[in-house]
Length: 471
Image (tube, rainbow, N blue to C red):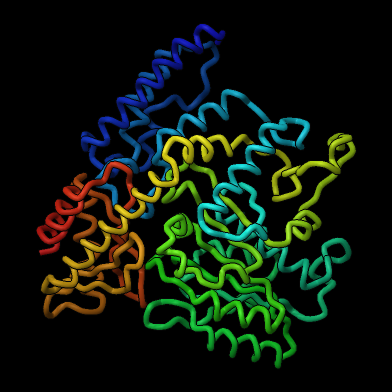
C-alpha cells in the first residue's frame, strides 16, 4: 500500500466508522452479537492468502463477517460490564498513535511520546485531586498495574530480594490482603508475583460490601502472631460487582501501623474523582503507596489506557529498571525512561488518546457527562426501590445499580434460574444488554450506565423492558 492508497482507503474507513457510530447511536443493530461459537472462523478462510487481495475484499468481510459478530458497546442501550472505549476524540488519538508508529524504548527513541505521557498523566492527577507527591505512567490495564504494585510491595518487604534469591530470600511467607469484592485480577497478580493462593487473605466486608478495617487489622495481627509477614493490602474504590467503597483512611492506618504496602484499585470509579463532590469516596488515598484508574473506562479514552500512580517513583524504577547497553544514551540522567516504569520494554504512544480526549472535551465536559451518568443511576435506583417485587441489593454511589426481581414464592436455586432467564431473554432480544453477577452466593443483575449516547429516554425504556420481561 502506497501513501495515496492509504489516503483514499483511510478516508473510506473513517467514513465507515463514523457511519457505524451514527448507526449504533440510533440502535440499528441488536446490542448483543447474534452469532454462534465458531461463526467468524467458519466464514473466513482457514489459510492465509498466497497472493495480495484488494482492500475492497477486506472491507466486504469487515461488513459481512466481523460486524455481525460484534457486541455494540457504544449502543445507548448497552448497560453491561462498564462503559468503555467511547470517545471519538480518543479514537482519533489512537489512530494518530498508530500512524506515527513511535516506539518508546527510551526518551531518545521518541521524546514526544515520553514527555506527552508525563504531561497527560499529570493533567489526570490534577483532575482527580491527587497531590503533587504522585507520579503517573500509562499501563495497559489495571490487572498489570496491580501486578506491578504487588511486585513493588514484595521487593520492599524483602529488601529487593529479587536481585538475590527472589522469594527464597524471604525469612517468612509474605501475605496479601483483599476483600471478597476485589477484582479477580488481584488473585491472579498474587499468583504471578509469587505469593501463592495460600497467602492471599480474603477480608470480611460490611453490609455495604466495603472491607471491614477491624477485620483487616485482626487478620494482620493474627498472621504476624503465626510467624508470617504481612506485605500488602489491595483496597478498592468502586468494586467490580457493586461499586463498593472501601474505607481508605481506616485501612491506611492499618497499613502504616504494620508497614504494609497499600494499593488502591479505582479502575472504573477513579474517573468519578474529577468531580469534587465524589472525592470524599476515596478519603485517605493520599496515604496509599499506589493507585490505578482506567481512563479507558468511564472517562472515555480508547482501550488500552490505564494510569498507574505511585508516591515513590524511585522505588518503582529500581524494581522495574532494565538498562541494556544498546538503550543507554547521554540524556538518561536528565529524563524519564518509561521502560523502567512497568513490565514491557517498549510502549505505544498511548498518551495521545488521553491528550486528545481531555483537550476536546475539557474538564467541564467530562464532569458533565459523569454527573449525567450518576443521575441516570439515581433515577433508576429510585424506580427499583419503589417497585413491588424488585430489590436493590447494594448502595449505588456511582453509576452501577445491582437489582433482582423477586416474585413471591421464589427463592434459592429457583430464584437464580428466574434471574438468569429474564436477563438472557433481554440480551437475546437485542433491545438491551445487561450482565448478571454473583452477590452473596446468588445471581443478581448489574445495570451499568455510562455510554456517551445514553439519554434519559433509554433508561426509561430499559426499566420498562426489565419489568415487562421479568414479569
